[in-house]
Image (cartoon, rainbow, N blue to C red; front, side, top):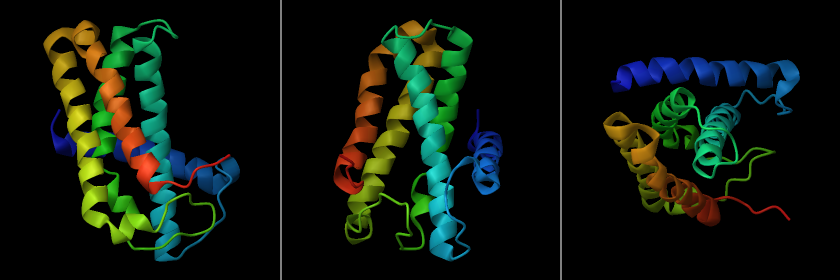
Length: 160
């Protein structure tokens, strides 16, 4: 799947999640500022990433039944959304409800590298799925999940 197709596919998912949030389904306060719009966007992208990683990880850990088609779609969706992460952190600003730390903007090149690590890991999952399905990709799932944690540990406020 090319990047243009990925973008169109994921744009629909992000729009749906954002629409739910705007209709009261997401619990986010309305903020029409550039910072608020960026937060709403990244919040939606992160929800998509978490949902897809949950499907992928759940199947890899045998916590949910394996469905090769669902696994493959989730891997492709994860890869498409991984490439959308950094644009949700523009412009600089942390509105109410965000758990982003200011270090994102003071260490921007490191943040971008961590986002690129996620994108590369997700692309690796796609390549593995296309080569040999779930069996080929399963061993890459944990490493992909660790790229999420690598960024969250450094740049997301912890909750108790």
